[in-house]
Image 1 (tube, rainbow, N blue to C red):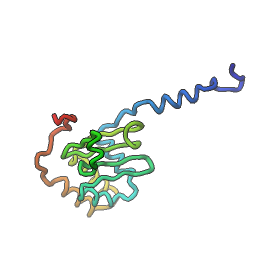
Image 2: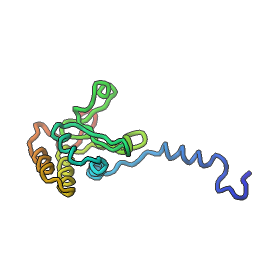
Image 3: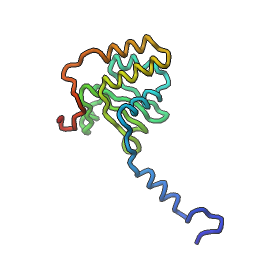
Image 4: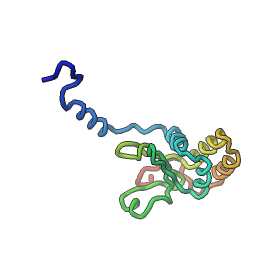
Length: 150
């Protein structure tokens, strides 16, 4: 029985919390996801160096980051992780199960990063990243393929 000053029956709050944890987070559009990941990195100019090395990053505050295909380790690949060449994987809230992962074409990510660097007053780093986005990549896919490579 409820007490007269209670807002919810006993156990209801814990059921609500469990349901929220099990709810699948709808991933944002790829460009929005990339902007969020860039925004969450506290030392923005460092991202230009990471991009030049095609090396990802991840913050520990909100669990936002970017993973390049070369960042995947043997264990990741053996577990089925796959990022096609020409793409980066952008994640938020530490990725699945609580968050999301989306594929973003690498040139799109680099263009967004260059714009963020420029807007934040880092013109040299922005120019460096723009030059990376403009260099041709062999066999760059036009759209994100599925896991079977199609």
